[in-house]
Amino acid sequence: MTDYTIKIVGRGEDIVYEADGKKYVFEVSFSAIPYKLYADRYSREDLGFRQFDVTEGEGQIIQRIADWITAKDGKPVRIVEKEDIPGTPLRSVDDIFR
Image 1 (spheres, helix red, strand yellow):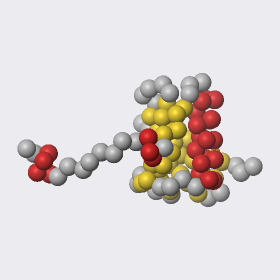
Image 2: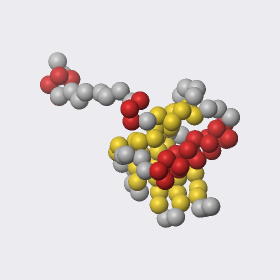
Image 3: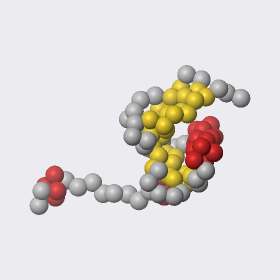
């Protein structure tokens, strides 16, 4: 089994997972029950969130984090996938200032 660390950082809205010299930063929401862990919006190595297709290994990491949060707080965690997130159309600056 790989040694790893999981930390809640920032204002409690990010989870940092580190193992084997790699770092992943996941977005999490603790504002409702079940908590939400965003499975495909995360950062690899830096803090810039992007959307990725989750690999099998990363899926195991995500499940490990969800299990850790549940064990820590006793609250359920919903893993939110890309298809669960409604798209938000981008607005132009002109539209915003109308």
